[in-house]
Every structure is written in structure tokens, then in C-alpha cells.
Length: 486
Image 1: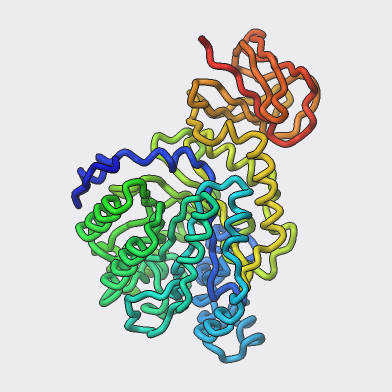
Image 2: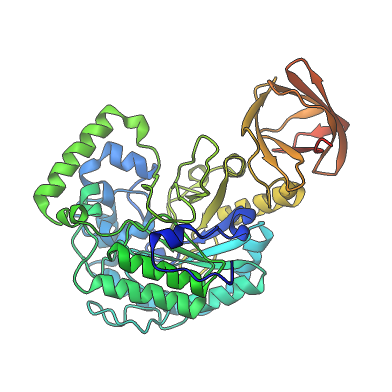
């Protein structure tokens, strides 16, 4: 693949085989960190979907995403606006720049990288510019609306070096579709949000910054968010140049290009009509509005469901992305109950891998760069599980089916090793000397990966009975590897 040159055409881009490393890695870390980590506040307490289902007319300002704080404080009467007035008075969002930069003088990117490596992650994607438009690198591309709206310090470069020194791949996130330094209008509804991609000088600015990130940091992942402000031809040139620069690079699916329909949403009547349709759809189908699954685009290397997963094995590679709580950025109000249990996160990860997915699990550091203890605890849980069972994850591929269940009702997920061995992962904490898998007849030698415990598998009618030389300990998600048939 390294010798191939790609042309800026859809046919050429779609002829490119995805690099093997990305599929084999399975587990990455997302990092949302920026000025929003100082207030670390969001209005919502439930999921982002809850905000749109219960408070649609101002949902964008009521989500649990602390990284959307700069917009939320513009909408009068929201908890974020009230918190900002009580805490910071009339200070604008821009006033957070100086204290943020002063507060990270002792930030240690190597400590981040060590924690991510020990968690079992194989790649890291850092937010370089979120919707507030603030750049975490000293960009040579001048922001015409807000001069000096960058860190000065090369935070991206320091993180990239630390991550690579730890043996991990490094990627960059860039908010191409939203930039509130170019479009400061308060956003309340989904149509407001969809129609807020800036025009004018912004498309050239965003493309120049994306190219700068590629040239300066050589990211293995180019992760755009929301949409993309240029036309399709310019995007194909960007992709071709990226692939020819980074032969093992990958791009995600959130590159929906500007169109007449999206530009029409800059007009209030068009936004009002779309909002009416969305509200009616939510009222009729509330259960269908869970998480975010971006629309399919003409070219991408993987899809990115957010706080959602695909229910079946997918032919196309995908990557589930989520925070450990309901926010990506750190939320000062998160309590223990707001964080998903480690077993839930690990179980969802296993489920995704069995269906051709990766997990990009988010870390939201505090303003000084400290990773909160509840997040570190969950990273350590991932590391412990992967050290014992990672042979069933890294480099695996989906089997002919993804799911089964034990006779006790515990879910089971399957992956296939490169040598054809079958991995059975029980999403629970069984104990005892045997397991029965319903509706699947297998036979042959096997072993439990944690502790390398010998086991045997016998078909009993339509079921499989697995017996162990030493009893199961009650540890979460034990993994049994059944040898490939000769």
C-alpha cells in the first residue's frame, strides 16, 4: 500500500484497502481537553438524546456535553448561563484562555501516554480544535475573526511525541463543521446546529488547518466532526494528499460536504420547517432517537456511532465513541453514579469487537491536565482485562455469528483468531467448573485465557458443554479459546 499513489477521485479513494493496523488495534483513547475544562459545566444530567427528547427547543444548550459550554452560556435562562453569571460574572468565554494556559505549566503528557498504554489502548486521538474554535497548537493559519485564538504552546506536538514514545499511534480530531469563533449565533435546536457551518472565509481556513495538522503531526487518524465546509472535489484532494503522505492513515465518516440543502438551513424558515419535522418524528419514535449514528458518506475508512453501537456484524469497519459519563469533556458535577461501570464499558467494547467494531473511549482531563480518578479507575480495569484476555481481541475478526447465551442467561460474544481458533467471551461473572452454551454445538480442546487454564468442549445435542481443569473464579468476562479444527 505504501507504493500506491491515490488520485483525488472517488473511484481511486475507494480502491484503497484500509490499513491492517486500524482493524487489529481495536481500542483507542479519545481526549477532549480545552478551555471548556475550566468551567467544566453542562446543563444536562442525562444523555444527549434525553436533551433532544425532553427539551428540544433549546436542546443544543441543554446537552450534557461540557465541551459545548461556549454556546450554552449564550442561551439565556439555561443552567449553564446562570452558572456562568454566578461564577464568572460578565466575563466572555475568551477569558478562559489565559488561566487555562497558566494552569497547564506542569501538565505531563507522558503520564497520559503511560496510562493509555497500560489500559491496553493502541492509538490515541486528541481534540485539536473543538467547536469553540480554540486551537491547541500554534497554528500558522490566522483566524480572521479572532486573532491569537490558539494555545501558542504546541500541546498537540507534545502529546503526539509522548503517545508515540509509549508505542501508540497518534491521531487528530478537528471540528470541521462547527466553529463558534466564525459563527457566534446561539444554537438551540438541531436545525440550528445543522445550519451553523460557517461560510465565507471559513472553508479555506478549515482546509488549511487540516492540511497543517497533517503536515506538522503526520496523524495516523484524521477524525473530522459534524460535517465539512468545502465541496466534494476539494475534499477528495485533501483525502488523496493525506493518503499519499500517510500511507497507513485512516479517515472517519463525518465529512458530509456543504450542499445547497445544508446552506438553506442558514435561513430561519428552513430551520423552522426541519425542526417541526424532527419534533414530530421524536414524538412518534422516541426509542429510535438513542445515540448518534452519522449518515453514510461516499468515502470513509470507518463509521462512528456515538453513544450507540451496531446490533449486528457490519461489513464496513466501525468505531464506537463515547465518554465514560454522559459528557466527553470533564464535568465537575459528575458523581459516581454518572459514570458507566467498568464492566458495562468493557462489555460494550467486547460486543463491538465481535461485530467488526473498535472502541474509541474518551478521557476528559481536568483543566490542569489531571485525569479524574473515576476515569483512571476505568482505564485500569480495561488494562487488567486486556492483559488477561487481549489475545481474543487484538488482531481478531468477527466469526460467522456474534452472539449466543449460556443456559444461565449470560450473553456470549465470539471473535476469531488469525489461526482460526474461536474465542468465546462470557459477558458476566460466572463461577463453577463448567459452562453450557446454548444453540451452538462445538467440540475439541480449549483453554481459558486468564491463567491459561485447560478446558474441554463437548457437543451435547445443540449445545456445548465447556469444563475447566480449575473452576471459574467469578471474574468478569472470562474468555475461552477453542482450538481450530484440523
